[in-house]
Image (cartoon, rainbow, N blue to C red; front, side, top):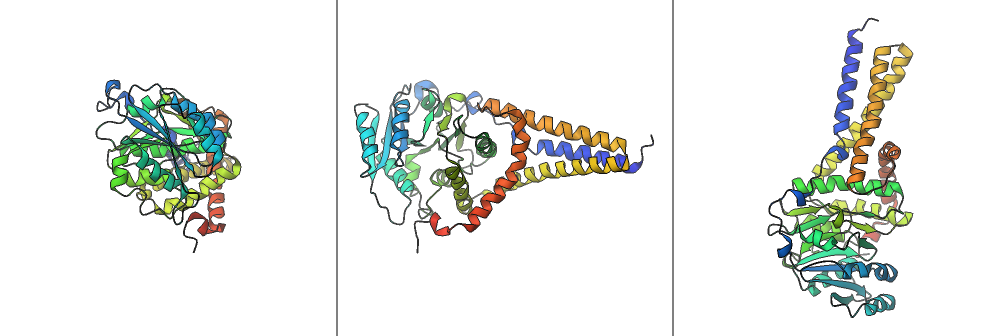
Length: 383
């Protein structure tokens, strides 16, 4: 068989494109566990006192289920759990009363109506003011730690130079695989960004920040009118170069209850609005778009090359393109499975490629829903 120059060029393009697309993948970029390498981290004898701030969010059932896990943490220093509920929510008040004898528990309440300010942000602001300690960890009532040493693991990253600690969180195992996959994939960008430069935002709950900085810089001032983004804006506003730590060891994980499809879609639509107000979005979104473009371009080129080579009976190009496609499918799946294992996510290997290809369609659907939405729903200023 004669190998012509065109075939050689086609094969080189296929090889280079495939190799590039394999590295343009968040699952191949390593996220180092800082607890294993950073000499500045405090030891167990010098752990700080911590306030765990829990937003009740009118969810007494979840609060009742998860509060015991927070009140029984194995933590050598002082800590408190401050529950912030809404005045008149008798169910939440009943739950708080059940645990009122616990020395770690405190509660405060926001008014049932809050004009021109998000209820969640008001709850955070009041909870921070009620906190007795400088380090505050923010959680929702519908989530729980996976370990009784969760607080110790988070606090071990609170060194003297840090002002933020971002812990890993995801939905529980009962949640659809794609929901957990999408959240984990986004976390690969956000955690690495926080570790290597300046933290951009939080992809979920489980963040720690300093009360002193929150009060000094007027908390949520600048985005009080936005209904959502209470976690995102804390990270985005208070992050400094090398000031954020990430807690990804297993003891630091938080699991959230299974969301309804509507709640999950609403969360994505709300982020489509919030991201317009976040700083430093260009770099991380550019990287995300490059990764997606290279992945789809690689698949399109490989499929077209296989079809064209089959028609033209160019067996060399057909063999190279077919091998490249197989390697792409296998290596992308293997890279994802390694990250699944690192973060304790049980997602079937064979679903990876389908989930990756679905991302663009999910993003398109989210943008369409956001475009059709009433933008007044995202603001407390309805006029």
